[in-house]
Length: 517
Image 1 (cartoon, rainbow, N blue to C red):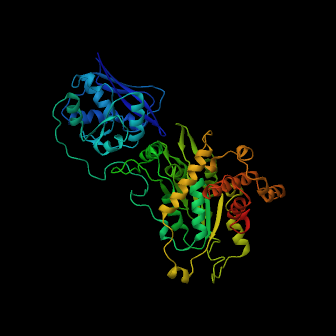
Image 2 (spheres, rainbow, N blue to C red):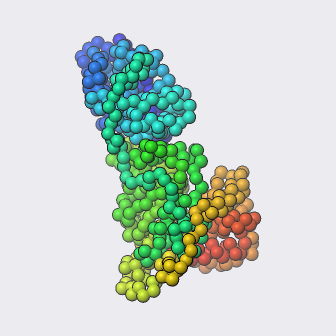
Image 3 (cartoon, rainbow, N blue to C red):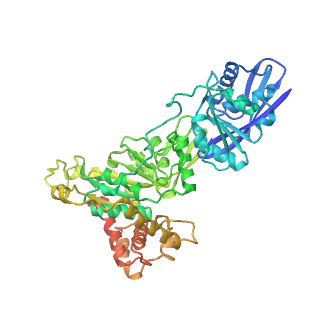
C-alpha cells in the first residue's frame, strides 16, 4: 500500500477552502474511485488524469486507486482538481517524491494529451492557499500572472504535465507547445483595460454632471430619464472616471469576482479601476444577480462590485429583475440559494438607471410630437415600483443639447478635476466616520442620521411636513439627508444646512409624476 497527498482549492463564491487530495493505492482490481462531495465534472477527473498520465509517458498506479478529498463535506466542483489528482497519483506510484508536493497547491485542468488548460478562480484560490500557509502554486501558464498577484506566493506557470513532473523532480523542464491564445474560460463582455471615458467629452448637461459628481462622492444611485440620444449612456459611461481608484484590498476583491466569472483580462489580472457593467433590458434574473444550473457564477451586479452598473431602458426590464435588485441595493451583497448550496457574492455598486420618458421616447422634447396617451405614459412609469424608486437618491430629467450649445460650447471640465473634488469629499466623510464601520454617506444608518449626524434643525422643516403628509417615506427621508451630507462634503461645510437639503430635495424631485415622489 502507498499513500501520497497534495493540495488544491474548492471555491464557494469568492471564498476558497484548501482541499487535501490523497491518493491511496492497494492491491486489487484496477480501478479509480474519487471520494468526497463532487460534481459530474470532477467525477470525470479520474479519466482525464489517467489519460493525461499515460499520454505523457508515465505509469498510472496499478491496482485499486482511491482518491480522497477532504474536508469531505465541502462541495468540490470543476476541473481544477485534475492536476492535483495526477501529481498525487504519480507520487503514490513513485515517479515523484512525496516531499516535492509539500507546501504546494495545484490548480489546472488536464487535457487528455497532458497539456494544462487554464481555469476560472485562480486568484481567490491562490489567496486561500496563501492564507493557509502554502508557499508554492502550480497552475497553467495563462493563469500564472493572475496567481502572482498574491504576494509571497511562488508561482509556476506550466504548459504540460511533463513540465510539472520535471519541476517536481528537479530536472530540466522540457519544451511544450503553448495552448492557442483564445483557449480558456471566458464569459460575457468586459471592458478592456485602458483610459476611461472622460467627462470632458460631455457637452452641456450641467445638472447631470453635478448629479454624477454627487453620486460618486457619496455612493448614491442615479435615475436618468430622457429622450433617446439625450446623453444618458454617455454620462453613465463616464461615472467610473470620477470614482476613486481601487485600493489593494478592493482590487483583489473585484479581480477575484471577475476571475470566477471568467472576465478577468489575463494580461492585466488585477483590476485597479472601478468596473463598469452595462445590462440590456432583456437581462434575466440569473444574469443580473448570478446563478447557474451547476456552478454558481456571479451576475452583473457582482461584476459591477465597487463600480458602476448601468441599466438602460430600465422600464422595459422584467418586474422580477427589478425587484431582485432591491436587496443588494440596500445590503451590498447577494445571497444565492440553490439545492447544491448557498453562495454569497459581494454587490456594492452604484446603479445608474436610464429610461425614456414614455414608450415612444418623445414626451417633453421640443417638437417631439409624442404619440402616447396620458394613460400609456402613466402605465409606463408605473413599471418601476415605489420601493425600487425609493432607493434612487438622485432623479434627473435629461434634455437633448440644443444645436447652438452643441456647436459653440467649450470642452467640459475633465474627469481628473472632478475626481479631485470627489476624493476630497470622500476624505472628509472618512474622517467623520473614523469611529464607525461605514465609509460613505450612502451607508449611514437612519438612526445615526437622526442623532449623531443630524443636519441643522432649521433645514428639516420642509422634509418633516412632507413626511407627515405621506409624500415622503421614512427611507426617502433618510436618503435625502445622506445626499445633503454629500453636498456639504463637496463644499467643505461642517454639516448640511437648508441649501444642501433643498438641493437634495430638488434632485429627488427632478422628474415629473410618480417618478418624483
